[in-house]
Image (tube, rainbow, N blue to C red; front, side, top):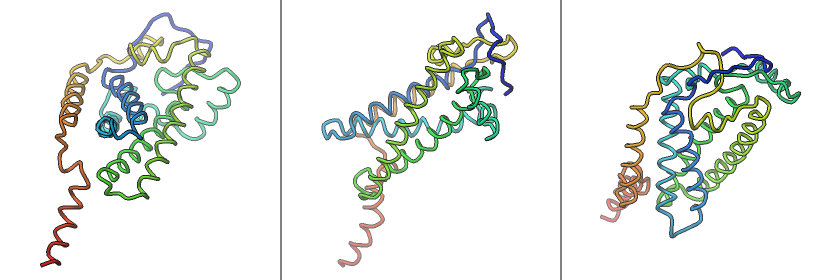
Length: 237
C-alpha cells in the first residue's frame, strides 16, 4: 500500500490488474453506456433492461472480487484513511503526486463511489421494472445515474491527468494489465479461468434476456402480481 515517490522510475513492466478486474472494468463501462443511450427508447427497452441487469451482476461480482481477488483488486489494498487522501490531493494539485502501483487514493475514492452508486442504480432499476416501483423510484434511479456519470467523468479526467504526471498510460494498463513498477510488486496470476467463466455467464445471461427469458425473481412486477394480486382475488370472492 506504500506509495513510491514520483521521481523514482522503473524500466520493467509488472502485472498489476488481473483478468477479472479488467473484464469487469470495461464491461461496466459498456453496460452503463448502453443503458444510458437506451433509457428513453421503447424500441430498445430490452437492451436497456439487459444492460442494467448485467451491470448489477458485474457490481455484485466486483464486490466479491474486492474481498477474494488478487492483491490490487482487494479493498484492503486501496482503501485509505482520510488523512492519506487529503495528503495525496495536496501533492496531486501541486503536480507531484506519489506513484501507486495499484489505485491511488483519489482513484480509490472514485471506485468506492461508483460501486455504491452502482448498487443504488441496480436496486432502483429493478424496482422500476414493470412499473412496480412507482415514480419515486424512477426519480431516485435517475439521481443515481446522474451522480454516477459525474463520478465517471471526474474519474476519466483523473486518469488522464495522472497519466500525464507519471508519464504512464493508465487506460492502456487497464487493458493489458501491466504497469511500470518494482519487480517484486507484481501479481503472479492473472486468474484467466475465472475471467473466462465470468464472460461465459454474462453472455449466457445476456442471451437469455434477449430471448425474453427473464426469471420471475428479476421481475418485481411478477412478485407484486403474485403477492398483491392474490389478496385482491380473495376479496372479490
